[in-house]
Length: 352
Image 1 (tube, rainbow, N blue to C red):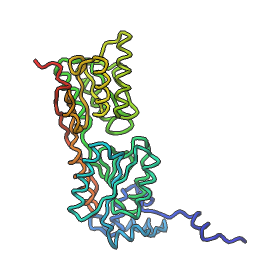
Image 2 (image 1 turned 135 degrees about the horizontal axis):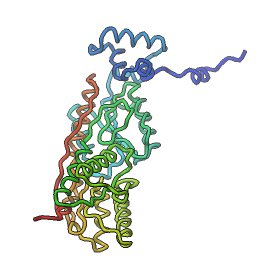
Image 3 (image 1 turned 180 degrees about the vertical axis):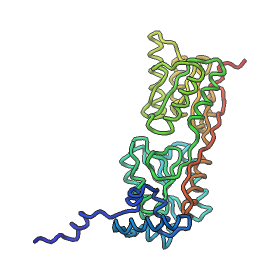
Image 4 (image 1 turned 90 degrees about the vertical axis):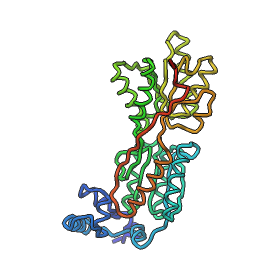
């Protein structure tokens, strides 16, 4: 009879992880991890049940878990869509400031909004870092690969863009409330035909901003026609220009211009404003504009842009703080930051 090679045996028997144990018992990965390390926050009865299932499933700690028990690498991995946006660079600054105070280094990676690239980065971080702080790629709809980190004992904190089904702490701004602040501001000036430039709605930040826009319009007793909402591929300047071209083409065919537009991102607002102004449309006299993120360029434009501030540095610093809480064995939590609308000339259509 042919003997299985050592390699074949490894391929036929998948190593049990604490993620598998957590699924079997319907508890969180962090609960399993703390129980197996005899953490005092877990009851004796639950510890024994988890250990029993671990024995049944032939669980043995992997090398990453052993390393984490015996010593830290003093390094945190940070994964963001890109560093060419002030929001993410400012958030990274907040993370780094917190990490520096704890004596940790930070490794920064860009997913460039690619699910494939993000997954490869995440898998490469196992064994390299003590924890991972991330804002997920817009291109991905399944971010379960982050759970492989949690399963190996590497805590995950998601900020701004989060994902369902990921075992992670979260730090976000209240995007729905931010959208409501923007739309309420426009409504107070008597505007009713308010359009919304949305990002892909499967991404939590853009989906929540869309919901905030819709709910505020409904509460004001206003119906929203299909042409009121434009869903961009992203919230880039290029997509903002494409939106403006769509509006201008419809206007040339006899459709009235929007009285105002609430943009899900400042770069899209910038692109649209440039196209509108090139076509002779005045901001804010003909179309009032509000963005989201409060990028530094907002106040430097010829017509300064009103925008919702999501406090990027604070978000990053709090994500860093949460990570070190997790590394000390604290349970993961969700933090929501209150947004603030910064009103500038672009949205002050009626100043009387």
